[in-house]
Amino acid sequence: MRLKFSALTVALGVVALGTSFAPVARAGCGFNPGIQAKGSLKPMAYVLGSGLTWADAQDPPAQNPIVGLWRVKVLSRGNQAFGIPDYTVLDQGFSAWHSDGTEILNSGRDPVTTNFCLGTWKQVGASSYKLAHYTMSWTGLTVDAKGNIVVNPKTKEPLNTYIGPGYIQEIVSIDPAGATFRGSFSVEQFDQNGKSQYVLNGDLFGTKITTDSPTFFQ
Image (cartoon, rainbow, N blue to C red; front, side, top):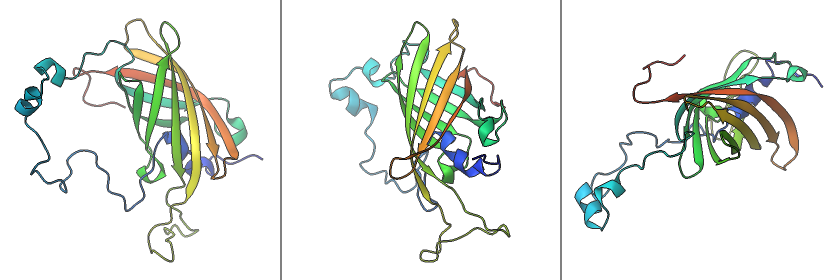
């Protein structure tokens, strides 16, 4: 069955590679005014007094070139059966690869359709890496024919339906300077019973971000 590109806009929220926050959820990113200062934080002197050194209290230097913050873009390739032209930008955002083998992506998609994802990675070659994501995908806001947001008749909150889990795999290769990477991805979306709904493929590109990088990325 051929799906129109416009019909996939909501479904492609899964390509955000992320974990959804319902409209009423309270995200804990950044300053949280609900946290009480009393007893919440311990001064550095306390940390050092526990037997740790100042060096232990700092972030360790990145030994692997993939570790760090990246600006990423995800492009469609080979998805014409779904009505998506090649090189269509499916997603973009900022991805942090951690030295402990985990990763997190802040996607550019609408937060109610899943815009954060958690991943795990390993090195599979001299300059190649494999990344796996397990997602929880939602439809996002539902709009009627008149453009009005549909609400749940019981809760009176905007209707946002859970689709099911998804799996995304990436294989990327980093350049010798460690400044960029490129690779391929595949994303498979399942329903709540584990039945595969569709598979999308494409290419992705990353640019390493440092403290000297531009203040604006397009």
